[in-house]
Length: 182
Image 1 (cartoon, rainbow, N blue to C red):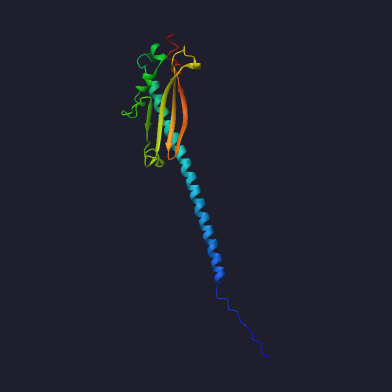
Image 2: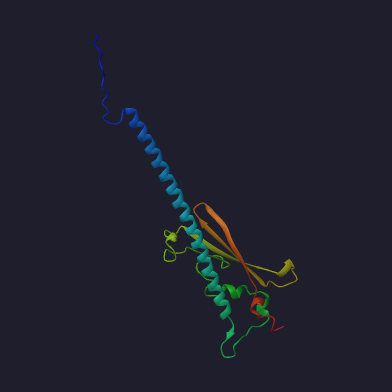
């Protein structure tokens, strides 16, 4: 009896091994792309938040500089203001050069702007709208008192988001304007 010996030649992967390897490779590449895009989305979002905060901070600083220079008498090194201007300083705020961003606005109490790409590359394409709204209130919600607190609310719109961002309160007493004339 003759015995036949079969020799197996291994010349590479078989069909099943190739399909399995390609499937694993496609899965790894897909997850890699997904996690990379997720990371880039998170980095873009954090850069956007940081740039919005910086833009609002710059706007608040411009307002502060205008307030500190308002009614300042350089010759006498003091502030010259009357008490009637401390009761409701809405007109004072709305007439500041840093308040008026667009003269075509229907309501002077609400000002909006699109930060440009010169501020941050995140703002390219005018996709972020920052608005500030001025409301005057009285201290402790007592109508007998004057409207001496200016509340500025910042809102930010981009994409599907329309968020209240930050509010600041401005009072002329913080300057010491109204206390010296009483």
